[in-house]
Length: 146
Length: 72
Image 1 (cartoon, each protein chain N blue to C red):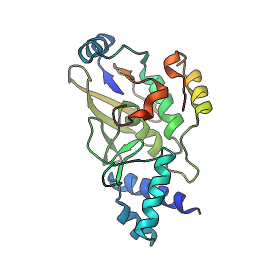
Image 2 (cartoon, rainbow over the protein chains, first blue to last red):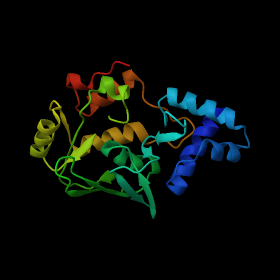
Image 3 (cartoon, rainbow over the protein chains, first blue to last red):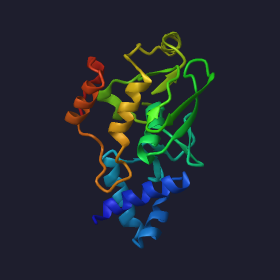
């Protein structure tokens, strides 16, 4: 299997199992590889927009739909806790894990607590509507803001 | 990409943040996007959809405003 694919599967497998993103050193240890080779793979995966790296440490900030840092989109699935990058990605956690989920978030305007859920492969009907402030062609100009 | 209680709350947020009001996305459409982007994300062959695929996905979900046009 191609090295970058092994790195990608290690990253996503670790997050799915633990709710936490691995460091480059963690991935290197798992794959019995060098830290430099893993860092280079992180960069290639970021160019494919499968990862977003921290600008200073080059560690994982996002492995969409998962966030490596706390966000207003907390997701519970199978007794494990995750953070998603946005409301789209919060449902994306259910799609990626193929599991029921519960999302705790807040109205972007007033801050009132809101809940979303996916059960048996479909979102549970509820109130709420999503708003994308940034047009699709510019999502990756500043993906953290998007 | 934020979730709001209602269209009125989207409107208020846009005014408060000086952001143009954009097309709204229902939870059903959002679920369609989530599946299209992430259903295979934990698999060996997973990848992000390319621009043409994104256009097809948006169209299938009824997201046809110029807002959704991709130029990557």
